[in-house]
Each structure stands twice: as C-alpha cells, then as structure tokens.
Image 1 (spheres, rainbow, N blue to C red):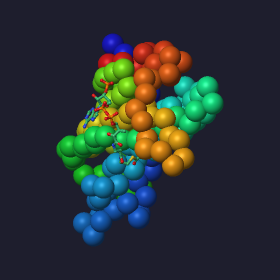
Image 2: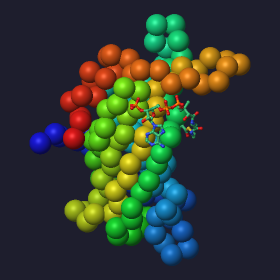
Image 3: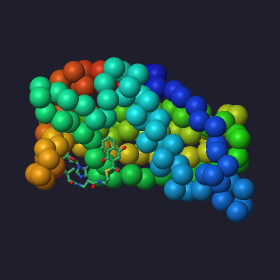
Image 4: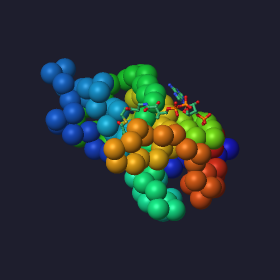
Length: 139
Ligand SMILES: CC(C)(COP(=O)(O)OP(=O)(O)OC[C@H]1O[C@@H](n2cnc3c(N)ncnc32)[C@H](O)[C@@H]1OP(=O)(O)O)[C@@H](O)C(=O)NCCC(=O)NCCSC(=O)c1cc(O)c2ccccc2c1O
C-alpha cells in the first residue's frame, strides 16, 4: 500500500463559522496549503522556472465531502496521495481526520502549464523530474 504524505494543521478561529465548526470553504485552503507543503517536501515548487520557462499548476477541478465537523483549535491530520498522474494533470486526494475521526475527503486536479506574460496560459506535459517524484505517491 502506498504511504501518503502526512501533515497537520491547527483549525484557526477565523476558519470557523457561527456554529463553531470549520467553514466548508476553508477546507479548500487547508488542502491547497498542504499540497504546496507536499510539493516543497519533494524539492520542487508549484511555481518554478524549468528550462527557462515559468511552470505553474492552475486548478481545473476541486471537491470536498464533509463527514464530521471539526472545531477551532482541533488538529487536522491531512494525508495526501496522487489519485491520478496524467500526461499534463495531477489529481491529488486528501483525507482529513482529527483524533482518529474522519472529518473530510477531498480532491484537487491541477494542470501543468507554461505561463508567459501577455500570453494565454498553456498546458504542457508534466516535467519528467516532477513525474518521477510523484510516482512514489500514486495510490
Ligand atoms: C488549465 C487550462 C489552460 C487547461 O486547458 P487545456 O485546454 O490545455 O486542457 P485540456 O482539456 O487539454 O486538459 C489538460 C489536462 O487537464 C485535465 N483536465 C482538464 N479539465 C479537467 C477537469 N475539469 N477535471 C479533471 N481533469 C481535467 C485533462 O484530463 C488533461 O489531463 P491529462 O493528464 O490527461 O493530460 C484551462 O483549463 C484553464 O485555463 N483553466 C482555468 C484555470 C483556472 O483559472 N483555475 C482557477 C484558479 S487556479 C488557482 O486557484 C491556483 C491555485 C494554486 O494553489 C496554485 C498554485 C501554484 C500555481 C498556480 C495556482 C493556481 O493558479
């Protein structure tokens, strides 16, 4: 079984709603920040220069299912796997838990793109070095 990348986030007060539970939209920011941390842990960045080109990873799809509420100052354990490693896209899956309780599951798909000032962003194949590092995390 593939071992996921694991990290944690403290649920911040400003991410909770009047019911005292984490707001649904905040989950997307926690997933995004955890994904960026994951990518940094592999030695690359979601926005980098490769062979003289600026390579970035805009998102084309994002979803989250909410299974149990989580409250301010609880610790969220976040596990990330690569659900699909395509030619140009990466679909990450996220499992979020707190004290062993399942909180939410999410998915984000991003596409490898060349960003050139003044031009439309263009999808390009994932760089080989990025693909090779992500292979170890394919579910
Ligand atoms: C991104 C696009 C330019 C891609 O358009 P294109 O026509 O080239 O795409 P294709 O149809 O050829 O597909 C390429 C590739 O993507 C897969 N795919 C496309 N759509 C989906 C989908 N809805 N769900 C799943 N997968 C999809 C498709 O299967 C192909 O995969 P392969 O692996 O098989 O090759 C164009 O779509 C575009 O411009 N979209 C708008 C992007 C956008 O504005 N997104 C919202 C904001 S982005 C954002 O918030 C953001 C967050 C971050 O954390 C970032 C971090 C770092 C850098 C940037 C970030 C960022 O922008």
